[in-house]
Amino acid sequence: TRKKVMRGPASVRLGHATVLSANAIQISNTGVGLLMDRTIREGETALVRVDAYVGGNPVRLQARASVVCCTCVGMDGFRISLRFQELDEDAQNAVDAMLRAR
Image (cartoon, rainbow, N blue to C red; front, side, top):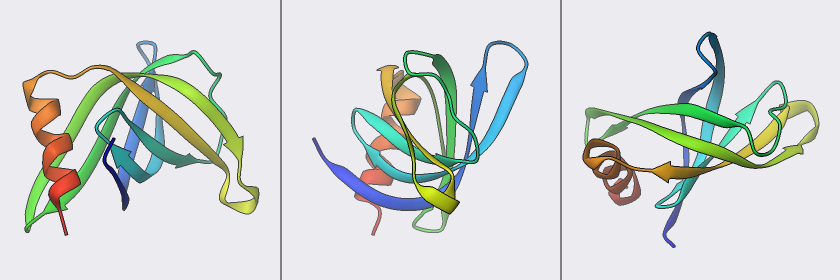
């Protein structure tokens, strides 16, 4: 599994209404790590969105994911680890681009 440390804006949508802002801190071809100011229950399913710039071009990843782990990291809030459930072609291309970015 390839992993990359990153910083970028992200959001998590739970259900049909609740959208929470987050910061993406790590991405891999199987999931994404976020920093948030609140917890999300393990096992919860969410729509995750991560925005990044790769080579000066905007890249948006949007994918359904499940919460694998939620850990308090002190004053920074909570580290949420999400595993992608399935990636469509656009999402896979976005993940590949983010992993290749310098």
